[in-house]
Length: 461
Image (cartoon, rainbow, N blue to C red; front, top):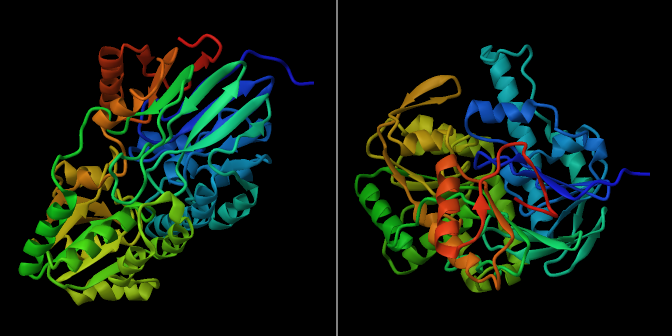
């Protein structure tokens, strides 16, 4: 018989950083993990991925995911490898996208370990990946898809419901009922006027709210991101430069392609070649088409979106782009320059001031993208220092995250104040700024929890 404990919530990740979403709920002797993400960015955060999980994976009864991005899902292969045997609940869109993201994550980690071994650049002998592509493929058997607005039962007397969050395909808010109380996790909230995704569902009456704060201290630019993108492309094309767009393979690549399609249709940019150098983004396009109820695009516009770009699948095709020269547009992952094919293009084209690098959204601290956005003039790429003379533009208007104003407006839809709001998933200044706005403008109780803190869900404080 399991021991009976008061229902609690422990913040295992995303409590002092914008990555590593992991929340552990204990109820009636059972353990439910909300999110299972990777820590990214600064080395001291990435090192947390190597620390043994705070509770034995074998003792976790279920995992519930909001969406497929790796800071929310990327630790699942390690959890399954190390003994987790329960289900991973996700929406159908999230479950499908994880079949792309998780094996790719394992493959990239194996590649990085092989490179570090070859260059003898690691303090570990031999350097090992956090998990392998094979580990990731094996973990996919744990996924159980559940539809939006269809309650399902979890161990510990918990009822869970996925509610639309916008953001990317399959992204959900998680609404839990347990111990006579309601607990609500925002996940990553999308934007009310996102060009691709529908807006997030309004906030219901809840006792405890766990809210993201990625843009908790910022608002997105008021201008039209499509017009801004068009201006960048036009001026770089005139100097026969290469426009490298660093885009998350799932979600951001589709938004960028949508803007390019519309710009070309109205002849607002010159007809230069566009290359989608991301096999994952190419595959994700089929998934977006299968889930048309989640996004705003009509079938004809969706098809036009993918006709404009030449897909690049093989590594050899990708290498040839580095010999082609401009003018051209390359859309490639990763969005924060943490890995992937975009790094090879940066090494080839970054030193030329005719070219441009577009950062298409938020850049977490400690990433190459954050360094470039802050004005860095060289990047460490595959063991070499690469001089960056290309024009660098951070387009936060392309972000799929609600900004500070949008988060507050979303919270205002609640019929009553929660007993407590915990502000997570943000850098320290962003989380604290949103906490202050919630208390000042809404009159709600709110605070930023500490990493590894445990709180009572029956008497939140």
